[in-house]
Length: 126
Image (cartoon, rainbow, N blue to C red; front, side, top):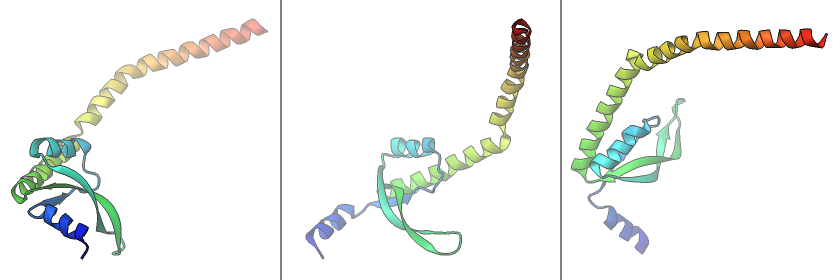
């Protein structure tokens, strides 16, 4: 083994990686880094594909001691569950629909005014 590899293994002794699933909200990742003081690191890993094959890809992991990584993992999945529950409630969708409906009449009126202006312009040209 090369000296660099031995040094690297010694540096990593006692450290564990928490692999961040693809699609994890950035806010959750930021909370993990800030609250648990984990180091974000990119590393290569084999990823299972839908067809059963695997592929080597670069993934994001958060590195730290075992106890901290386990606590962060628990927090990560609890935070994701809270986020999914919020999405299932559809609060955001309902709020945007309400805003859309409130502004829809204003948009319709603007379109009517533009159509009327164009009709007036056409009459003036004749």
